[in-house]
Image 1 (cartoon, rainbow, N blue to C red):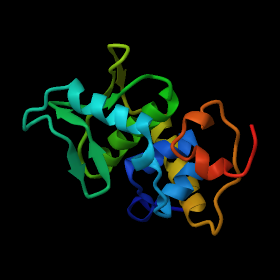
Image 2 (image 1 turned 90 degrees about the horizontal axis):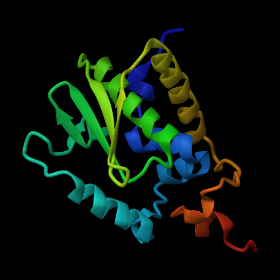
Image 3 (image 1 turned 180 degrees about the horizontal axis):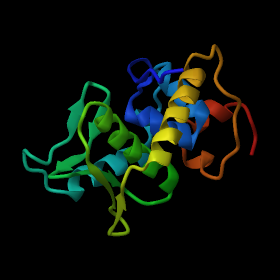
Length: 173
């Protein structure tokens, strides 16, 4: 069976959310966005915007109205993150960007800039990564086609999530 990237591709944020919380992914896909009400998200946006001086060649680039690259510089796609607390989802998101670009004939390397830690993690797309991305896209599409959100998974970072009140309304700690 051939992999149908055109029908499976998703926004980068959805790819990231798959690794953070599948319920958050489903809710976001249905237009339920709680980020605008979150001080943590606002703080992250402010730090993100002020962390790197962006000349015209470095500004965010929207590709196919699907993925938003923070910085594209020479041969490297750079993603800016506040901290490495969500390291796996951060890494998978930039790998997805590299995979996406490769699908349209652009080969790049990646780097994640962790602002608080003043650290950069270099990222290169491997064949194993490509296979994992294909599998993940299939799973994401299965989730977002679902009639109901996935069940709540109690994760260590739930209380800090913008969707916490939505998920846990009516429950006691």
